[in-house]
Length: 112
Length: 115
Image (cartoon, rainbow over all chains, first blue to last red):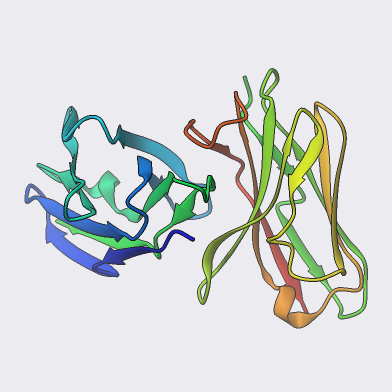
């Protein structure tokens, strides 16, 4: 089945700096890669996703890049703000697995 | 729409007791998922339903766990008997279609503590 690895497990940045979270996946047939943000006491919420037919997608301060050859994808947050502090999960799906597999999460702390 | 609604928000029970977690998916969504979140194992898919029919329950840890979806607007996850290792946050999620290539809408979760 699919295996998704996520790094780093914790990340601390100063307000205004950029944050990058990286994930790798094992199933070369994977074709959908969402990112979820989980705030304290809440369920995960989709913030951006990318499909295998594109290499990059942006939504305001958030962008995701996909390298199918290397089987990795990354989340980029620019001009970080305190409200960006949360746990971020990457996920992948595709091939015969057909189930969404989540990474282990990255706890992002944006300090003033 | 109020989103996915789960109850209770917190449940504290003693080992051996029956626990029932409840979920109301978003109206019009065709798929419902139950996930468990722990520090050790992260987010694990337990079971999912399409059009009220259980499709894959391979993630259900043991026979002590069971899930039902009697209609399109209600699902339960039952643990009987409960054990301390079942302590976790249980999330219900729903999506519009049967495909996993679709946005999942998560509820706020049920924090279960089994003493």
